[in-house]
Length: 346
Ligand code: NAP
Image 1 (cartoon, rainbow, N blue to C red):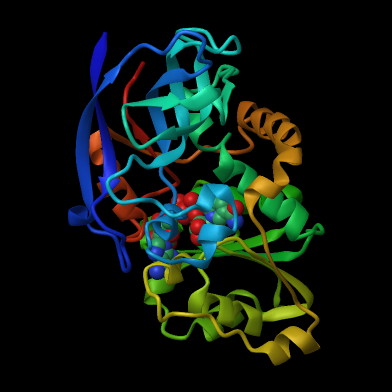
Image 2 (image 1 turned 90 degrees about the vertical axis):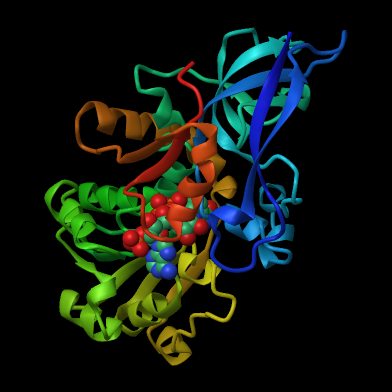
């Protein structure tokens, strides 16, 4: 049997903000069979995670390309890989059986032939929606968990600032910090998001950064006693303003710099005298370095979800053709919570 596999590619490398015309929906016939003796697996995509880091892979040059395999440059015209949830359609691999659910590295397309089944693992839904396994149980959740608990080294009662706070990683960082006993303020890009942080997710306070003219003064107002921990999802002038308001021995988890991804000339220049004299630790981190925490993370987050102590925020679009707009929307603040595309229900 053969299917018409539709998948998303980029037409050329992308240097600024992504736009619809940068992408193409291609299709190719794919035989749903594998060679005798091969341990390859063909999977059908159900849910795919939409993540900001992919924009750096789409550039002709980015320092990220050589950092880790998963950040390698994307070749225009080729299928784009990404994390998500899929169903096994054909398998020559004894580890995977037809119709089993898997999670791992699949593609921005309807089907993928996975060589040797590499990068896949069996999925046990644990009674949660399948989309959770592309979102909160995936890299986004582990990023928030490892970044907050390992990199920020929190202590109860500390003052925590989270930027990108209504996004996939940010909303969870804020929820973890509140549960842990910290005072938490988040920034987000519109008033609906700000209300959600305060009224639904339990942040102590939140503000719309697009309405603020002087971020340094804004953070001074929200943190009259200074910031102990800054979880940075955005970089740029927000990082500069946060450093200016940090307390002695403050910690900054440099998770991402989305405000700089689509603007090559933008670079944060935090005052290094503040960093030195206040003995501030600024630490970058990448979630694949923290897979040792995965089991602990899953057991903690699933308990919290079952007990209603953590909420999962998801923003789901439908159909492979909606992947470009879902992705573009990340850089325009369209999403609330984890952006996911449901490519097929089953
Ligand atoms: P996300 O926050 O769910 O989505 C992106 C959000 O970023 C948008 O909704 C928008 O919200 C905000 N944004 C877009 N352009 C912005 C700009 N110019 N200035 C300020 N905010 C902007 O995405 P995510 O998956 O949770 O990722 C958040 C950050 O973590 C990204 O920087 C990402 O690269 C990073 N990350 C790092 C790791 C790691 O291992 N270190 C892993 C996953 C993600 P607003 O409406 O608030 O503007």
